[in-house]
Length: 157
View 1 (cartoon, rainbow, N blue to C red):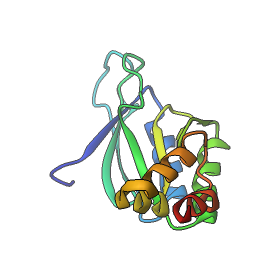
View 2 (view 1 turned 180 degrees about the horizontal axis):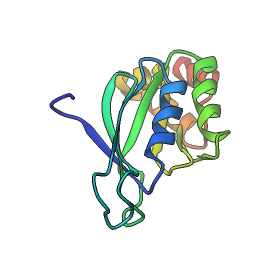
View 3 (view 1 turned 135 degrees about the vertical axis):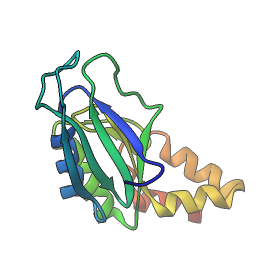
């Protein structure tokens, strides 16, 4: 296990979420599944308690901790994409699997975890600053899923 690992709290579906991430994103995998050695407030001995997984090269664990804590946009995974096809593939995988669209490239999976599906061209334009970043920012604001062609057109002015 990595020295620094992101822990994502789930009500009870950490294994299903980890399997979905491993199937959806490259350089992702399902790792060890650890079962509870005894009863706990939201589960019984033998239930899946902790799931090790990797999302796009980032080591994580999923903890089936029960319904006490909910996800918010204060935490999200950001996945950089190279083109519209890749953007569409990840966005649609999340949204079409019980997730929901949000704004400016954000969506939530069916477990409530937020994702930013972000084309590199958007990040490059924002990093350029000045009038280019302003045009791109204004083009992005009304979008849900990012439209790469519209971002590229805004970059050009």
